[in-house]
Length: 132
Image 1 (cartoon, rainbow, N blue to C red):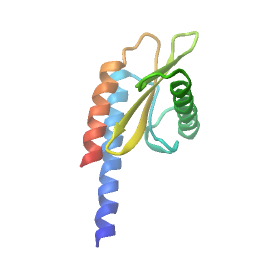
Image 2: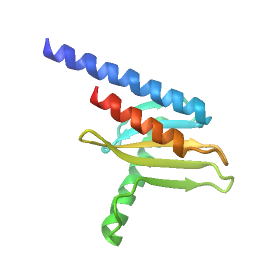
Image 3: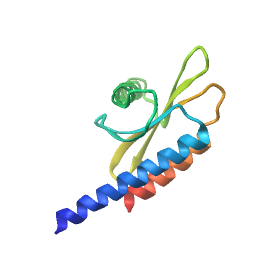
Image 4: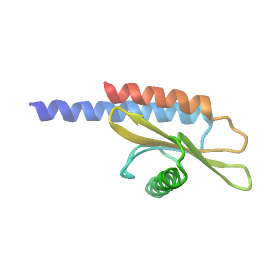
């Protein structure tokens, strides 16, 4: 009985995470959004022309680069890394903790589109969903 309750809670969390990403994507007119675990597993995503598995792999690569840079240079905790194309389209990776989990929220933003307020709100809601 307990396993069934835990499975339902995981399913509820997945539904909440998908809603959060969908809302954020619509508001920001982002090209893609994916929530990735520290292990590089996509936890939730919004359908897009981008391959979610490849995007998750790229986010994991960015995250490991961040960690190596932090250790080598002695930087404090890094909460964001952006990769900007020549046409100003950006891959933004926002690193944060939800409960005991280290997560990365990644979005592909069109040129000159603001994103910080929307990703801040999404991170807040993801943390709440994680606790529920």
